[in-house]
Length: 263
Image (tube, rainbow, N blue to C red; front, side, top):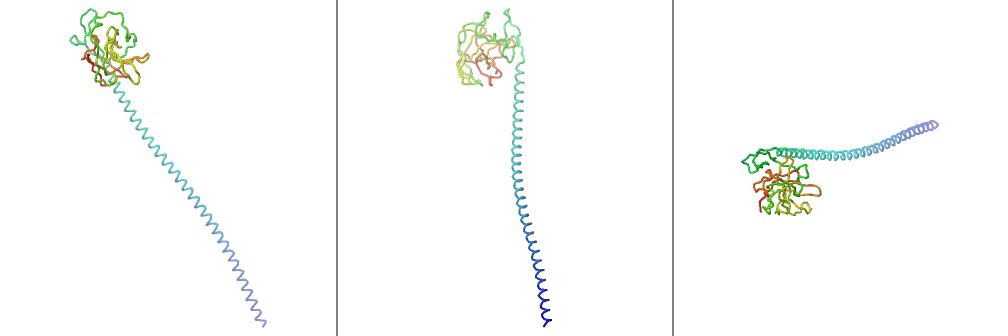
């Protein structure tokens, strides 16, 4: 009887020990599970943060790409502008070369229609500019008559001139002779509207910077004289010849040059 009781006690003790071990193991497992859950939570948070950082980085890269595209377009636009500017400079240089070429002089012979007479009444060779320019002497452009006697300053002659085919359309039209002389020669005028301004265009004799007297078409704006066209040939009559060659005056003259006919 005593032996059985002892065996039962031993059995219960063994069971208690095993239960204690099981509880200990359970606690350890529960702790590990909590640690794993915490690690998973940290992993999830880290993954979310990394995803957010990657998204932000992608947005930054997209903005950078757009900025690069805009910079590329800007550079291309600047290149186009540079090319256009270079072409404009080349065109300006060509135009300047043409203008400088027109400053050359030619020899007028006795057989030429535009030969001038010297003070003794005889014919002599005279150099005439291919491109008469504005004289620096304002007095030479004065639209009032001077006191010099000139055999070509007759007050009789052509009463009107017709300008056609001009690149500057406002210059075209009929010019009427008006009273008075300019540099001893008649003046022809017409009223017109140029660039929204009511003014008078004139055909008159002027003295260019080479000292040659030729026909010119121009106007005045305030205190400024504006010249559109002038003839290669010198003034020899009371009106331009229908065979006169007209050249555009920089910067207002526009090709083609006009044809001037006597009305």
